[in-house]
Image (cartoon, rainbow, N blue to C red):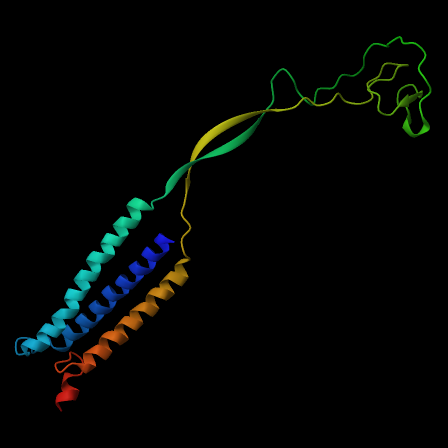
Length: 201
C-alpha cells in the first residue's frame, strides 16, 4: 500500500517536472528575442516554472532513491525437488523367472480373481506375483519409494510492476492536467507569461 502511494506521488511530481519544463521552454523561445527588455515581474514568472521544475526533479529523485533502497528486489530461497533414484535399484529391471516354490495344496481361487498363466496355462490368482506351477513372474515387484533430494537455490523474485502502457497513459494524462492548471493560473496574473499581450491590448 505504501509503495503504491509512493508510485503515484512520483508520477505527480514527474508530471509537474515535465509540464513546467514544457512551459518554461515555450516561454523562453517566445521571448528570447527581447529577453533583456522584459519586465522584471514577467521574467520572474517565467523563471518560476524553472524553479518548480528543479524542485520537482529533486523530490522525484528522492522518491526514486527511497523506493530503491526500501523496496528493492529481494532474493528468496526457493525449494526445488529433484527425483533421486539409487544406482543399486532400477525400476525397469525385470526378473524373468524364479524357482518353482513347493507349497501345500492351496484353497481354490474365487472365480472373480482367477486368471490364466501366460506360460503354462494354469489357473492362477490375478493378484499373485508368480505362478506356483511354472515359477514365471506374473506381476512386477512393487516399486520402491523414490528418495527426494532437496536443493536450495537462490532466485530473484521480481516485484510486480504496473503495465508500462497504463503507466505511460497515466503520466501523459497527469502532464496534460498540470499544463492546464499552469496555463489557467497564468491567465489570472497581471504579468502572465502566455496571455501578456492579450491582456494589455
